[in-house]
Figure 1: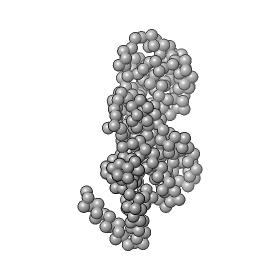
Figure 2: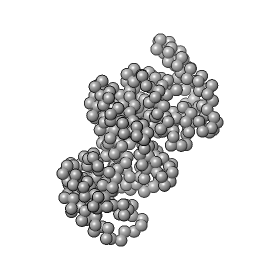
Figure 3: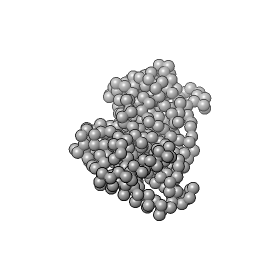
Figure 4: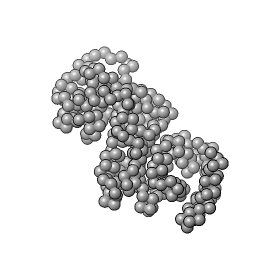
Length: 331
């Protein structure tokens, strides 16, 4: 099914349209439901991306699109999977590797919402267009959170770069990519260039203060001695801006959180703590809700799509036109 839907969308609207739709959380959710996956669970993200990656296997060049990454350890293979086809792309593969790395870095370090990333799918085309669908899990509230990116809409990796962030739960979030956070980003980058012993001494002073329990940053999570090494690295690299700071290897959530806190105290630039998170059934669901997947109907649907696509390739678009007319009645 994912193969046929992809062929149909790309054939009708072009390869960029599929990226645009995957970055739309409502379309993505509906797509997962059409495939028969659980509409209300975190599994719809991993299974839909996995089915799509498997479904287009062997058709990558025909569809001009590739999918790298996936769940768990597979996500860490994303750079090598991009480089593997790099010499056959009409763009610099390193730019795609950077986009993949920075999207993961932003959602794990620049947006600190309590959700640990465990899934990262990077979808890209031969010409260098890309989209990201990644997901994190919060072990405390048992909710998952999905992050959608569309490369053509990203003007900055650190200023409102997301197409959408989806979750059923909101909470306190250190949101360093909020559009209102420009001064906090600048001051954090400036602070990262200060000698590490000065920063560590400031941290120790803060730890001697009595902070109210409602404070967004838990100072108990910050260990000055452990951070000395990474502050030495940021001092030596002298990042010119927040994106450069975020891109330094080893700079993670605690480094960003520490610098943001000290930046607020030293420069008075308070970061944003605003949480940025803001179907239908075709064949049933594999969990049996609202009814078990009807395999016969599923197979017939795939058969109809395959037949329509074959006819369209033969310049007989009757079936595809019928699907268009059906859509006009339903919209």
